[in-house]
Image 1 (cartoon, helix red, strand yellow):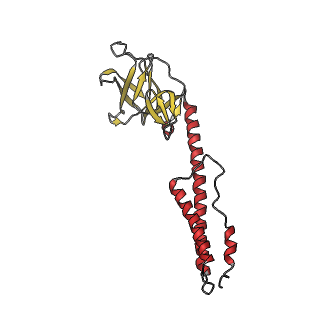
Image 2 (cartoon, helix red, strand yellow):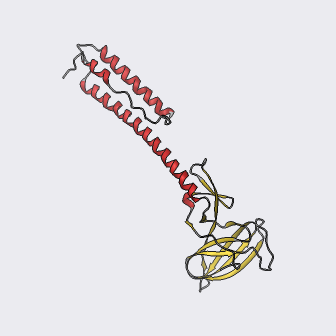
Image 3 (cartoon, rainbow, N blue to C red):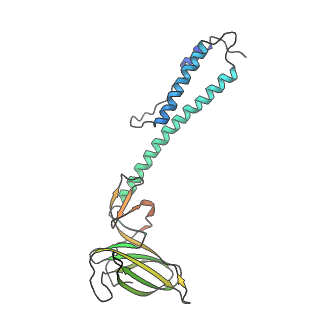
Length: 238
């Protein structure tokens, strides 16, 4: 079926791409380029229809195919705009979540923590009942404390060091690293993983994703394993 030469008059009402009502959202440069091309296509299409040969009009299938293809592009532009809005909402949600952690005592995987006011706390995961040899070193690598502890299988969040060495020396506040090596009843090595806990003192919302500061170290929200009641100083280990 041939298209009547007067048909182009109905094309002028074709809707332009819908712009987001959110004045703060803007499309990326690449999206803007596609939008410009879409408008150019509509201009070329209507000009083509205006100036086509009445005796040899544009093929119906070709005309329909072009409209479908560029209508799809228009829908993609709308989807891109909506995705940008969703990304902004997610970023806001991440920032809000990060702020909620400030002031809480959090547990993360790690071996280095801060001795502050005579308290440094670690956690350990022991796969099977073992005798665990604990060594604590300062920032220069010097061993300041060591000891052997019998531990049952499971998570242990109660190892608290009071800052005193084996000889009773009171070590200054600062960074200390704990190394834990386990041996089972048969004398075989047992892999013991360590965790550190500390107060989340700030959240850097300018980073993506936001970063939480714990004892001078930065962690993302997904690295937080749990929130615990702050540890209190006791013996060198428990």
